[in-house]
Image (cartoon, rainbow, N blue to C red; front, side):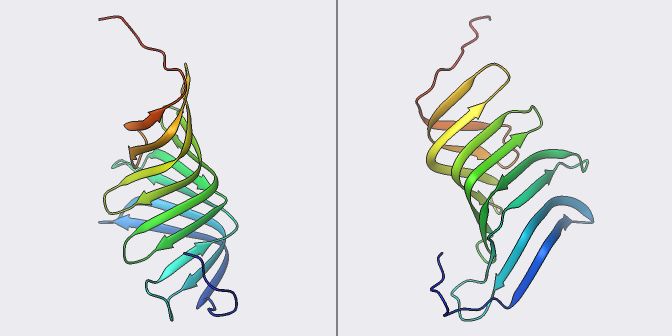
Length: 157
């Protein structure tokens, strides 16, 4: 959502912000941002804009890092619990597999990430490219919609 210039002012502004999300006293997500602008007045849905980049760390049930997500710009919608990440977006899972794209949506409620944009996934053995993909939040199970790169298949039983 683009805000018209000079028509809205953030209700909160923060620099070098770290936000921790927990569930039953267990750390689930950590978000770090260089700048945070919170808009919750005169908007349809309260939102937070991270205009100078962000870094998200996902934790598993043992509070170990399960994946990371970073981008140069982000918008998080408070009610729908959805974040749009843009520009130089990268997701890295515990296996070291890396997703690169220019835009990505993180659906916090369904714990999924997806995009319809060009994607590049680098694994230990291959580089896969395509248009669009869906994955679980920790990027351990993903599906590329229109594969355009080469995939190495293992023919062993």
